[in-house]
Every structure is written in structure tokens, then in C-alpha cells.
Image 1: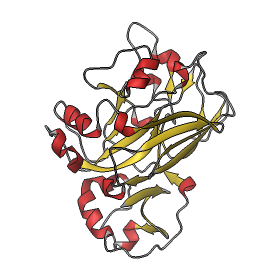
Image 2: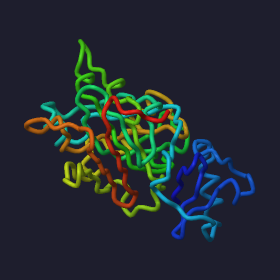
Image 3: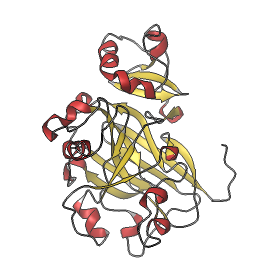
Image 4: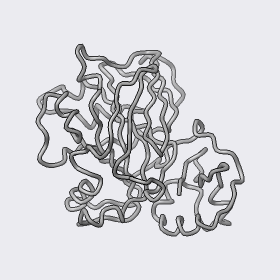
Length: 284
């Protein structure tokens, strides 16, 4: 099953287009995309009986498939090659920070660059579909609603400022958590633990990797987190980025006005972010 958020309404994505879930289910399900995760098992059962689209689907018009999660977790240094390019050792346990929900955006956006050094990090995003508390890694995938593409945009100057790192704020500027274009359930993917991902800046490949190379797999991350906090339906986990970020280059390379960043994961889709100057006028 694939679901998306178009105009703030939950859509089921089928090969021919999209289905408006609230209308097609005769209001059995809400139009609110975030509300879907509280009843995700029911939604999957209902979706199995849908036979045809009732409208086209344009991924460029989509919003985030998870527009208002209760909790947003992110994992640092989860690929050995990224840890190495950062000059850091491979971690013994997941390195966890958060991104604030106000940073969330859809798959095709214009991002205003704040002052500083803004970097790119393509990531697989995991969306929780069942409450998880004290879950073993062996049962972790049972608690996953689906997967989507994410960008963990990061302002490196703020991130590294002060006596302690400012990861949470530096990675939570407006538009710094684009996701989409849809959420894909694991059964739609032949190998959900081994997906190719990457990003291009102005058509030049900057990152390319495979999720099988994560130090801590999706199962291990859910097991680790759920034994410390409760994961709720609709929560999201940015699972880390492979090597190729701007900060790790010699000399470092960061995003500038006029740049276009394309991020993708096989079997899921792609994001496109265009960047404008910090003094550009943006619609609220």
C-alpha cells in the first residue's frame, strides 16, 4: 500500500492514480493524513478492496505523508563511511537527536537558506504504525507503517557552536525536514532492509549508498528506542545518512541560492528542494 497527502487530504495511491480515502470509504476513515496511523491496520485491510483510481496523482503537489508526528527521532553517524568522513569513530550505540515538527515539509519545496553553512543528508525515514514499547528487534518491523524519503538538512555552524552541539536546532529550520512523496508499506518492497538511496546537487551525484550498510538497522533502532521511550503511531525516525555530505568534502561544500537538490530512494520516490537566499520573501 502507498498513501500520500495531497492538499491536506489522505490519498491511497494506486497504479492508475489516487483515491480520496474519506470519500471512497464513505467517511469510515478521516481525510486527515496524520490520523491514518492510529488506524493503520484497518486502513490496509480496507485498501485491499479498492480497485481503481478516482483522480490523478501528481507527486509534485503532495505534502509530507506524515505532516504532524508526535515525535521526530533522528540517528547520527549510522553509516561507517559517514562517521569516517566526519572524523569520528563508529558508535557503539545509536546516536539520537530530534528534529522539531515545524521543520517538516513536502517532497517538492522551496527552502529559504538561513545564515551559515547548510548541508544535505539523504535518509530513509521510518514511520511507526503500532505503538512500540519494549519491542525486541525481531518484532520491530511489525510496528512499522511504512517508509518514505527524507532530507535531514543541517546548518553546520549552529550545529557545532557552543560548549555542546546544537543538533536539534541546527536541523530544524523551516523546511529542513522534507519528506515524501508517499509512504510505502514494507510489503511493497522486495528487500525493505536493502534500498539504494542517494542525492544529486544541480545534477551532480553527491551521495549514493544502500540501507543495508546502516550500522544499526531499522529493527535495531526501533528496539533501542522503544526500550527507552514509547513510540506512537505516526512517529518518525530519520535513520541516518551515507557518506558524501558537504561537510566531509575538501574543501567543504554547502548549499547556495539557486541550487536544486534531488534526493531519492529506490522503490519509494524522490524529493526536490530549490534553495533561495535568506532574505527572500516566502509565503507563510
